[in-house]
Image (cartoon, rainbow over all chains, first blue to last red; front, side, top):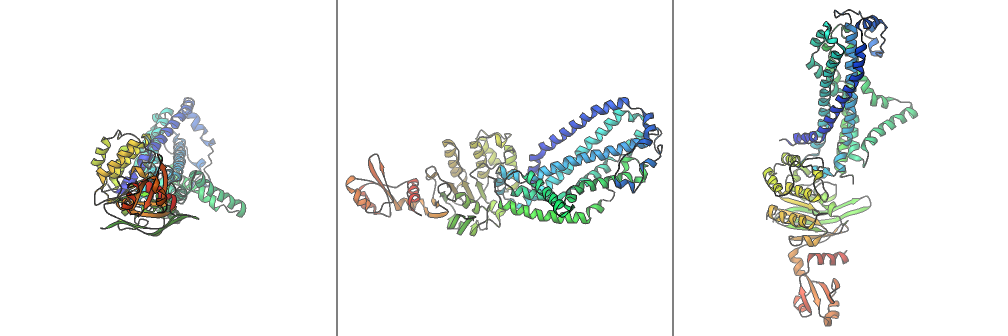
Length: 323
Length: 284
């Protein structure tokens, strides 16, 4: 077998339990939320829902104001029951919250993975074993990056499957499955497209976050202890100093702005689709994949990530075990 | 005879600390070299430089390649066991073997499994659950099942009991060594390896103060248990060491006339350990 694939397999062996644990915890949390959902469903009255629609106020942020006003949407555009829009809105909100929850969870894992990627091997001295094999240093580091990125994307898809099944369960608990609209929603969801979108969504997030992740990898190859604290703390500290001393918020925007940007993209794609007159399932969160992947931001991200990659490589070659 | 290893003016410093100073030697094929020195003498630093794990000054040629430039190529034909346990603790034994088989073409999977079958190591055990001796056995199985030209053992018996030590060295001799290969064994416990060594390198404070074959050393140094009446005469011959043993005076002499010594007492070849202690105590 190609040694690069063997290195990726090694990463899988090391991290598969973590992925299973995360999936388990995620599933547990979702099931826990079912308890209040079940209680609410007992009190739900479809007539009240329809009557109260005009009073619903949702803060969509600036993005939506440029495209449409939710309050102007006709209640009975779709669905013979007349509650089509609220259900679709709920469905859409649910999707966004779910996606962001998965996103946040996986971002945390990404930080943890890259902070530990080299440090773990240095701490238990197994870096000496790896470096006593006929393996190129680039192969070792690249295998970690590829494993990290693909592992996160695949985990997000797996969590998304659970999430969609969960939505179906919630729909069933609320009794929405009795409505004609449910059939429409169910048939409208293009599951394959949705997962392709999710994969691309994660990929772009990781691409834009790659400078920070590769920075963590560099820290992982350099410090003697606590790589996650050093890796997270130092850029945050620098960002705060920049704000206080120079009144410059660029760094903090770069650190946390990606999540906001991704949210904007998701909202934009979710809500501008013909003023919600299409079923949610036909949405394409990224209808223009190349627009994002070949953006200036992606180019700059790859460039900065490349600099951190070579710093990580340099430290990897210099530092043997932490002890 | 081809040189597998060639070092020329190798030096290494960590800040102001000079770990290695101008080390030069060659190692041909078919030799078992003992790299012997006290703790902190630079043995591990030297081996790490030779395996391309650290940067250095001077030049090193290992199997025809510069280790810091072509470590990957070097490791295709070199087996290494480090002074500490380096196998990933979270891995299962079967995964370690599979990993090794995947990254090294010269690795013989069946030979490794056969070797492990002779031990009490189970394939589904995790490395972290193995005893220190078992970890060494596993690592040894990996390197002995790999057809390499050079084997480097850095304090391989550190922390092992006497049974594992004996077994380790007999395995290296029986399963690995032949006239086309060389072995470098770093240790500060000279007595446990001297019976298998063909050459020794003594390291002290980062200097290679002696590199010679065991055969030469045995013919160059003599141990003399002297008769009382010759003690003063022997002292005038500048012995390297003198000590008392069961009431008798024992001397270690270098380049002395054996026939003359035999007339003054009982002459024997000293052990490498004796020579090591004598030289380490004096020479700088």
